[in-house]
Amino acid sequence: MEPYYKTISFTHQGLVRKNNEDNFLELPEDGCFAVMDGMGGGSAGEIASRIAVDCVRMAVEGTWEDSPGERRYAIYQALHRANAQIVDITRRNNYQSMGCTVSILILDPWNPQRAFTCQIGDSRIYCYRHGELFQLTTDHTIGNDMIRQGRDIAKVPERMLHVLTRVVGTNQVIFPTWQEVGVCENDIFLICSDGITTMLSNEKIAQIFADSHQAPEIIVDELKDAVLEAGAHDNFTMICVKFNDTLPDPYVPGPIEIEESDRMMTLAEQRIDYGIK
Image 1 (cartoon, helix red, strand yellow):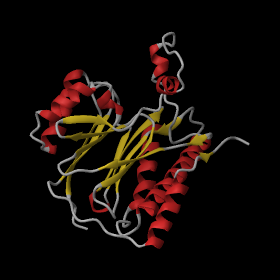
Image 2 (image 1 turned 90 degrees about the vertical axis):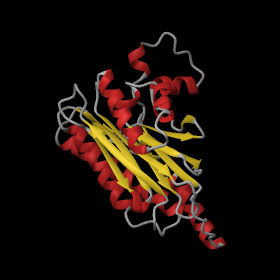
Image 3 (image 1 turned 60 degrees about the vertical axis):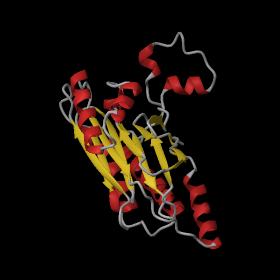
Image 4 (image 1 turned 120 degrees about the vertical axis):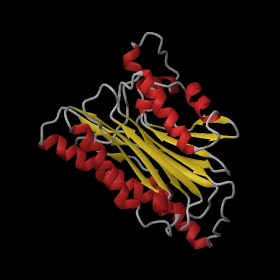
C-alpha cells in the first residue's frame, strides 16, 4: 500500500519528570497510529505503555489487506493481552499501581474516507479540517462521567474531576470507546498524550494549526515549543497525520466480506471484564 498521507511524531520527557512513561506506535504502511501514556511508580508506567504498544504492533502489522472489522478485532484482542500482562506484572512485583492510557487512529483499508478511533483514558485525538479543530475523543475521567450521567460536579474537588475511570492495566473492566470518523482531503489528525493538553488549551492548539500552513512538521515543532514554554510538567508525545489533497478510490467488497467484517466489528465492541471472582 502506498500511503496517501504523511506522518511525523515526537516524544519528550518534559521538564519535570525523571523518565518518559509515554510510548507511541507509528505504522504508516498499516495505517495505524497510537499513543500510550503510562502511569505507576518508578519504571512501572514506562513498562505498561511499552507492553500496550508491543501488543498493538504485533496485532496490526501486516494487516492492510484485512477487512476493517478484522483489524478492529485484532486491536480488541491486543488490548486484552496487554491488560492481562500488565495485571500479571503488577501482582508479581507488588506494584501499587501500573497502567496506561491508549488512543489509536486506525484507517479503513477498504475506504480511504473512513477511519476509526479507539480510546481508553485521557490521551486525545483531534482532527483539523477546513480551518477548524475538532476534538474527536472525550477523556475518561470522573468529571466527564458525572457530566454524562447528568450529575452535579460543582462540589467535587477539581483534582478528583480529572481522575481516570478507564485504563489498560486493571483487574476490573477494559472498555474502549470506538468511533467511526470521516476522512477528507487535507485533513490533519493529531494523536497526543495529556502532557500536551494539560499545558495547552484547545484554542491554543487550534491557533498553532491555523498558523502552520498545513505542514505537519511545523505543527509538531510549534506544539513542542509551546509545551516547553508552558513548563512541560509531564511527558508529552504526539503523532501528526496529514492526508493528501487526493484520496485513493475505495475497494468495493462483496456481500460475504461485508457480513464477516461487520461480525468482527461487533465482537470488537464487547466489554472485556476482569472482575475479581
